[in-house]
Length: 133
Image 1 (cartoon, rainbow, N blue to C red):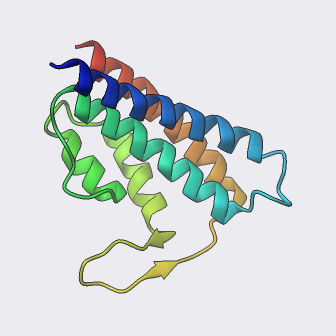
Image 2: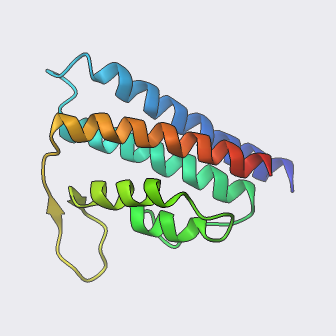
């Protein structure tokens, strides 16, 4: 693998970590970091982490919805079903990337945000395993 690809996937992982750190800090500042903003920040963290793992193995996702990312993980070592189930559940709050279906957004409750952070941590562990193999 070229040094450029190594840098690219490393940059994705680093960005994912930064988004996750921002989301954790945002939990303490609800007047600025609404649940909708936190949802999007955590979603970016999850996307960057999974994309980093895919890129490390020379693969890409067809799109960047949680469902597309889950499907793409089958190329490198499918993500745990518990994580996939959580991601599908979170996707129900926002569906802003469909090709044919309508646009949908709903404010997630704070409990969902806490679950998303736990799921992002589980994704991070999975990514570490995928890159190590």
